[in-house]
Image (cartoon, rainbow, N blue to C red):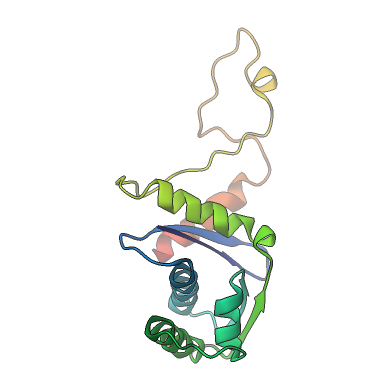
Length: 166
């Protein structure tokens, strides 16, 4: 089973997390696991204000108090979630359609696919131009470390900050 979550700062910075779980869980349990992981990461980062977008109607309604959790596992997940919520000065949650949560769903799929592999880091390479423009005939091949856009310095700063946190 895989989980996916994306933390976004007010400035637009993002931390994307793909998580592989080595246990069986229902869809609702997986939704709670993702919410709990996201809240835990935010708490560890000393974030005090958080707005959560959740695509699970059940989890959303449990947290808001609109639905009562009856299943013992759901009650336990809700209790853990409420304990984490108490840490935050400001907490809000909104339910979003699954199609508006494609990044988290893609990360969950990635976590599920790579379940039995020992991968700690999967880099995402951004190419800004097609190969025909990047690699003209007679030129040397470009290495993955070569960057020619204006954002590379900001990316390096953000990556360093994230690595220092970890």
